[in-house]
Length: 132
Length: 396
Image (cartoon, rainbow over all chains, first blue to last red):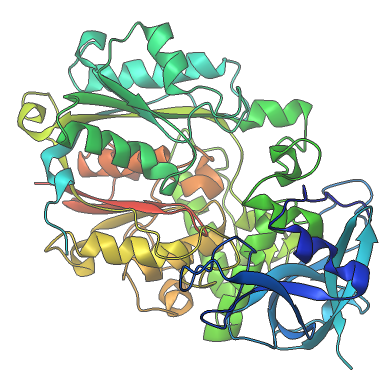
């Protein structure tokens, strides 16, 4: 499956490249001890610059999902799942991803999932599969 | 909470709209001129009276079909002499032109602001089916602060994000596909009475369920229909508005707030920015949701109309499914007629100002065959996700 890839920056590269070491890196604030996403040079909760990427467990649950049926590109012939996954570390800590490795119709809200990286060039996309 | 409600100094005095088609054999500029000249004449003005121009989003992507004409091009082409003009994508959604134009008047920069919105997506899609793909917003790697978090996961259309909102609404509130279908069915019923509407043939619930699934649980009939069109609205300072041929339609209150992140997935998935917009709008008026006689609510995707119903307090939070069930409450003879020209789902994706045009047509009693019962208050809201704005309109 072809992917449009992000332009890497100082701020976002930990998130997009942490998978090279098998780690999901999410920005964390040392002052208020909260994670936040998307990554940025400042904590959106408390305004602190004491922020840095930190590995998380890669575990989470499906907050919502949609099964895409439209072939927006010729190669997208099979339905695929776009989801918002909430990470286990913190309520509300979440991002859009794909759920892979199981039939699309088996995905449901609150399903436990675990990260699985998929490399495209210098980007390791954090996708998720069902957590057995 | 607010020291001054600036929009009370501003009224709508004229409206205009080009042909609406799929496609229209006219350039984006010609469509824009058709709409703008009709609106100027409708307000009893001439080109020389227009001293401000506002547009959302403006020509911020070099003639892109999403907004091929911006203020700069129009000012030159129409030979306007303005004290202020503005466009730009970053603002409270498709009604940003109205809100910005009203601010320009209230701050003393202008007396009559021409607000317009042109779209030529139907023509463009005849030659490039993927013209509006989200991946085309950037060339090469996705450098967008906003879109890079979605396009790598093959979120190639906003409908994927809308599917996420819809599924969550179903999960939290028990909303059903049959309930959601009422938005599309109501718009189609209304479009049958609008000679400009794109789709006018009757639609049944069976037709809805036979329509192709695009991104669960949203189907083709949950998506608005691309068109070529331009719509123009004249905003005037309230004291001079009384001189025109039309009874002024006052801007009673606007909503433009965003108290959440500028993001599709970091906001409350079932309230979205619409919640902030609704709270702000009602904090700026003594009127209440029960005073609203008609509502023109963004239906770029059907779920957004449901979200706006709740966000504007037109029904309780989480209750939009039960509110629209059976369609009778939102029908043209119901307690709250919505999208009386067929909305964007059947009328055409005029993208924002079409709702304002329709609200004014109804308040002035000029809606022809689709005219609903006389009323004085109409609410217009547009946008989805982090984009949102609203305006409460009153004809005294």
